[in-house]
Image 1 (cartoon, rainbow, N blue to C red):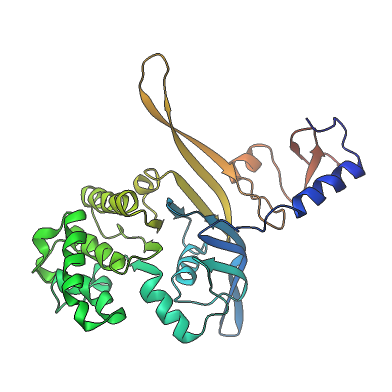
Image 2 (tube, rainbow, N blue to C red):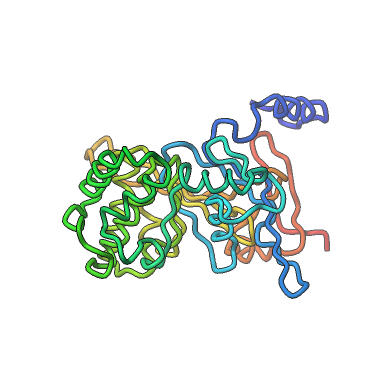
Length: 317
């Protein structure tokens, strides 16, 4: 246990121990370190991401939530290779998103990440059948002689996501839920390391949304694909093990869910716990309901205890 009253030497030793730890995000599939994105509109700078930190490990199925303008869609566009960060670090599956050339970025979008848009019309080419849409990404990245393998892969994905009966249908002949499940298959065609989805159930009713989310879960469990979903749908956010909230361009809170089995009854329940996120600069976003309940604003008093830090309202007046 740490000493009851840490000295400057104690604090220095702890800081040295922190510096000797492995680099931030060294074992993560996705690493965002103090990520910044600034847009300039009509001569005015808008900072969409303000030093955001995020780690996603291989095999995770997680959700990103936040109000409009929080920065979550900007983050998704950066991770998808559709936008470039202004500063900071962003790495996905070993790719540095700040230093990639235009050619590298194109290859990255075709092979390393898959993307599913909210608008069903943006995900599929209207003049191709479902099978042809799924095969197309593979045809763009491999030899024509492998066409038979492309067809087999397309059929396997349609079977896995329960849309095999849509094989020869064009998008207008499918329901919205079927279109989104085929879109997931398209995104998975080239076996990406990461599948990104921006509000994929936003245009669907709750029952259809459940079917689409089940397709994401199937891809995660059966293919091991890492999946990050941006959503406003609390039902979707509540189905994943980890939900990260973004506020004012930074990660603010994180909800982790785990299953617990009652030793007496044997019943399994899901327990959720919310955490505030401490970023790499030492900043902490306290939930508004907490600060409002205690009348905290402008500044707070900090006290270092043996095993925690106490945050109290300013009582200097």
